[in-house]
Length: 417
Ligand SMILES: C=C(O[C@@H]1C=C(C(=O)O)C=C[C@H]1O)C(=O)O
Image 1 (tube, protein in one colour):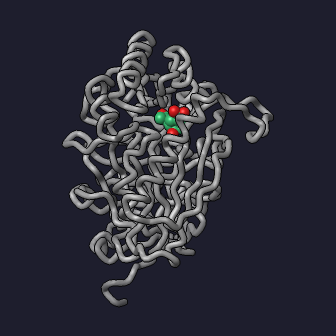
Image 2 (cartoon, rainbow, N blue to C red):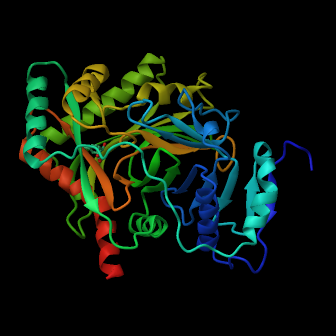
Image 3 (cartoon, helix red, strand yellow):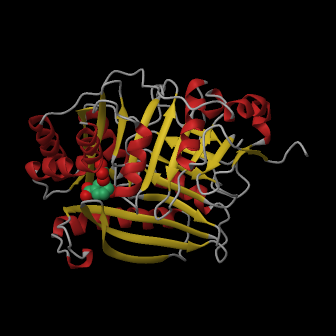
């Protein structure tokens, strides 16, 4: 076989059995046992998850956001809200890949060829019971009380009134005990079922930790038909069971908050001098038990002279005003000064690049997520503030957002009792 071709390893018959999820689990177990970074994800609307294992941790460190052109390296991006030594920007090269929709093979990239003998042997090994997921070496972040959070919101509103910022998105972390026998892969499967339209992910990196999430927000997407997509998602209200999303009524506060995010995206296009984009919305969309307002933006890459639009937009967009604020730097400075905790990978971005094939990349904002610790999970949620924000209402909104991931912890508690 030529040295630069992907290699397909066939699963031996007896070892792990025919179940795609059991095979995925076995590959994850092998990666954890050998301290390699891994990502498991399920795209919105897809029926099967995929898994990627990077050969070494060192290979996963990256300086720049990934390039989104078809010739760029394939892998899984995992970027923090703010790049730092504690929360490095990561790009896991697609060294070993598995698609649960095609469970008979494991794909090995040319750069990872040296892994083939050990991996072949691992495929014949009996499945392991316990998986040892890595935890962050950082201290547990400060978790704001209701009084602290409402104070932060009041400070944010005062900053808006003083015209230091136009919009800022404050957030907090919360600690939830883990149910006995909590299994991240089982939780991943449950999230996939519960939220079919979310991007569901489980990312695990030695020294960095293990993150699980189900996000509704696309940051930058390039699809094989040559389309670039992004969205302005903001404004939140609880979803009443059986309610049809487009019958929801929005207050002026949410309409304005979302319009600012849409305007931020249009400004990014303007900075690149791109005028040919389609804008649809805002429309009401459901995300689990929540409703949001969303405007979709689309560019036909075959009709504009911007071959690097995906790459350029990604660099301009992150962090968007849906998670930071506007103007961007003033909002980030406010958060750095007042938020009082390290967001780490919450409100960063994540997703596959040039996978499953060159020319397809889907990056999402890392919302509705949790970080795993030995006996607890750290959950994260934020709310966009405008001059009309009411501190108690914003606290309630974070509580509501925490239920996306909290519900799965609760379900698992009850089912393990
Ligand atoms: C910040 C979060 O969500 C963002 C903020 C929203 C809002 O303020 O209404 C809505 C959707 C997201 O863009 C979060 O889920 O933590």
